[in-house]
Image (cartoon, rainbow, N blue to C red; front, side, top):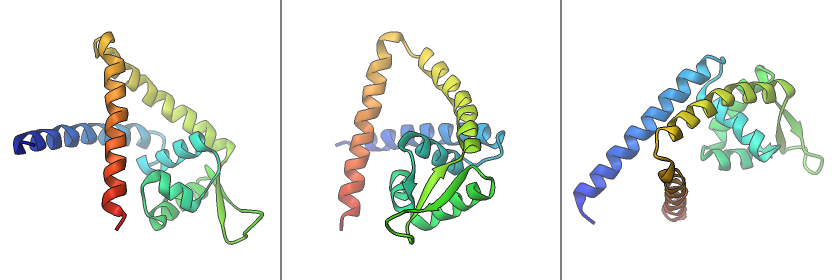
Length: 150
């Protein structure tokens, strides 16, 4: 593989990630939460109640980082930590009604921007782009698995 191809791939990925990170940061700060907090709300909304280990895994973050972010959300009353019936040492993280409402409000704004992005693509290319992103996600997951196994 050519070095210039790797450099161009890197440039495109970095540019895309920065645009998304700053868009998300600006939109989420309007709701009084950080991007990390919003992603935790989204993850809980998508997957339901999760243990701290499960949540950290789905967020691709360390347990200590997720614990800190969850604590902020607990103080804001957007999530609850509950003991699991089988093991009182394990905490289940649950969205509260306020957390669910905030998620709906915040992500409604994000979905509008996602629609605008898709509308700026030719209709014939939208599925191709979505399929490519799914393929890219699988490739990154495969890389993460292989590089972090040892």
